Length: 219
Image 1 (cartoon, helix red, strand yellow):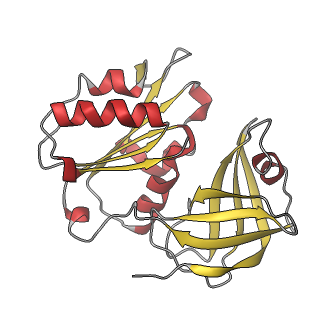
Image 2 (cartoon, rainbow, N blue to C red; image 1 turned 30 degrees about the horizontal axis):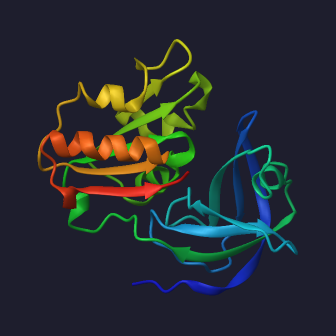
């Protein structure tokens, strides 16, 4: 098992991709930091004690680290991260967390369920483990929040709650009530805590064993 890096590293920003007005992917130097897909790191501005946890968005074999950041107007870190430019410096610590795909689970049918920026660990899963048998259900308020959905090809399913468009008009949990789910499926839930609690109960009611449901609460 990989041990967390105790000392925070200073990493230069290599690129910032703005996906929407309020969301960006920040790419920075890896500085030798090793992680397992699904884990998170702690990121802050160089010289600022404030840090926040972000799931790693990039793949395990990438030469850099990426995180998906959603701007929170009263947040102490997210606004600064979204406004970063190439050449700026962030500090990074970690990795942490147990939201991971074991070798055994990778061979099973997988159902990835996310709201908002909770899609981040799934991006890392897909980049790191080619050939996964998965379906990704992503719930967002707006149509333009399908963050880099092309990375998932035909495995991506978009639930949009506040606008027309997408694959389903409504919340993720509303769609789950209609979905047939084989009992051998391993379901991963990441995002809003209310979604996770409701989806967990729905999946159990559909026959999934508790040990087949894995969760990561974002907010």
